Length: 302
Image (cartoon, rainbow, N blue to C red; front, side, top):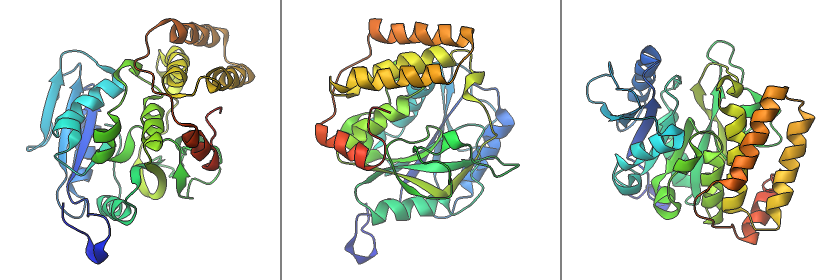
């Protein structure tokens, strides 16, 4: 990897992009790929993973992988990572982009390269998601508690799954996304492991992905998955005394939001499943990482 000017960290020249699709948005997918190809600087190699559906109609030169079954969001993205060598190490940085997203600016890749060069401990960048018609960024797309100003960049403790860039050294050190999660909270699991290993995460308002405004509850499995995976997240990553505290806070927050009875029933079913089903290896974070999360504005009880 070439050294950057001024003797700073190596310049991350080689970027790759992982896009997973279920084959139901071919026009959006082609537009996204073209927006990646228009980025300034060295060309970005794109890998599209068909998650239980064949990939068709993509431009020439785009690598595709057809999976016989839907492995879920983390499983599909992990396959895409390995397409760039073990842990993605054939490139310096991987972009993970939703197949109905679009990079509206051609300088995003260069901004990514500059950010990782300037800060050797920066491991993950979370982009700002904006609606292509209104320009509005939903509050839930700002990965911090103080989310009222989406135009403010900051250090954060998690990132957005379909609008981010990850230094592949992070993946080599802490591993990829948790396949077991299938959908929901897999980014926070990776974020906590990265922070525990000493890496940092930035939310960058100047790195934009256009994406239509949607509600996560449109997915039929939403309430069950967010509850199950919240329990798994705690069981896998938190020091034992914080597990009941973290989950108790989320239980109270869920009840305070007054979900419908069917949604609440699904949530409690997922909550129970989270305790009774295997969640993968347990690697509790260090207490100094708990303190780091707290200093960054999001202690791991909220």
